[in-house]
Length: 285
Image 1 (tube, rainbow, N blue to C red):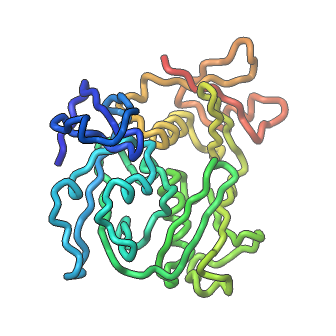
Image 2 (cartoon, rainbow, N blue to C red):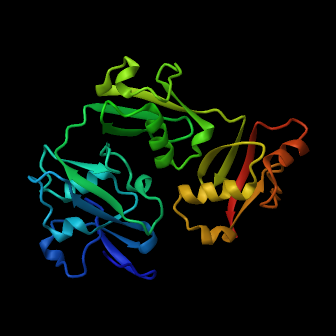
Image 3 (cartoon, helix red, strand yellow):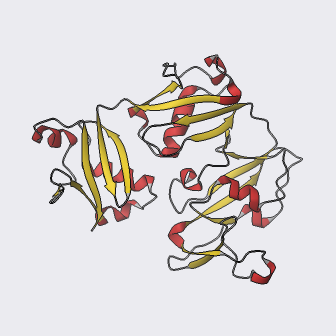
């Protein structure tokens, strides 16, 4: 695998957002614009062979690739022009992420590689999951036999959410049994629309720079757990937890620095209105 130095600076293709090898001669690349990035903005991608004897990944450059984390799956297809039109990149052995899927969604940590399997398998179900708390939806192809419980787990995994605080519904809002398969929904499986909705009584509205983050939670949740969830969503290592702090926006001119072991119940109890949506500001110390 590719080894990355913490201080390494990389040159990346503007077109496909792949990190260029130091041995590449720029005159051989039909590009004039590039990204200059550091290690924290990159991730490793590996494309492996499936059990199909007709598919052989014999190019080491396909097995070990290096991209910007804000690249999409489509960038991998564009970069690897030898992937045939009847082939696809299977993730986690059971679904094909939509080409618009950001690679950051497929990462559990910055240092863990994203592993795909190159396959000719036809996945007949095409599903899209949306969530009011998320800016973009999740699209993927899979087998019609995939259960809705698995779909919910998949969506929560990619968005890095607490599964027990969400429920999956049909696009119209109808509840569905998580043991049902996609083909049991009586919906068109070639364009199945689903919603992931929060069932939490309390939410935290967290401002971080120009970004607004919504986190579903419970009264028992302590602030350090919320902070960990935010860091995980942004692929920030947990060992940097002490570098961040949550400030309660009870006074916009003078936010309150709250102890990380404080529970949501403690904060709501101290508020005269109870607060169903608690405003915070995330700051780096």
